[in-house]
Amino acid sequence: MSDIDISQVLAQMRVMASRAQDGALQPSQVNGAEKPDFGQLLKSSINAVNETQQQAGKLSDAFEAGNPNVDLTQVMVALQKANVSFQAMTQVRNKLVDAYNEIMRMQF
Image (cartoon, rainbow, N blue to C red; front, side, top):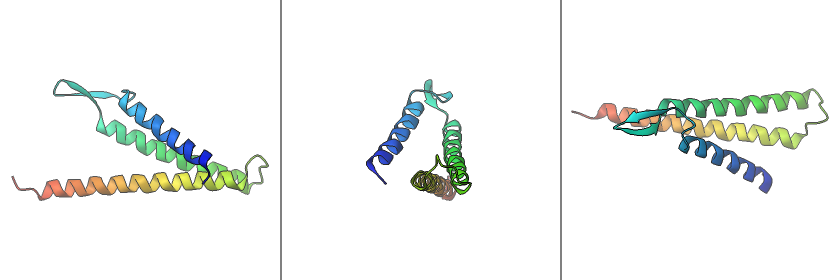
């Protein structure tokens, strides 16, 4: 991956982080303080991963169809972005399941 591709990925991550911090998500009231809604944050993250995968699929289809405006490097970078974002989402899911199981094992 080149420096340009890495900087694009980092820029996308920064945009997502700023949206989460700036209240672009629906805030909820918790103890009188406004905080981002966890469900909304999770949903927007899943939608972003889905959008990345769909974009990679469209580029791949266009390359296979012989579109001269799409080159192999674009397709490979898009597929790798989709793969990395899906793996990250899977790890988040695994951590959430682990946390849920730990809470369920607690005795009150």
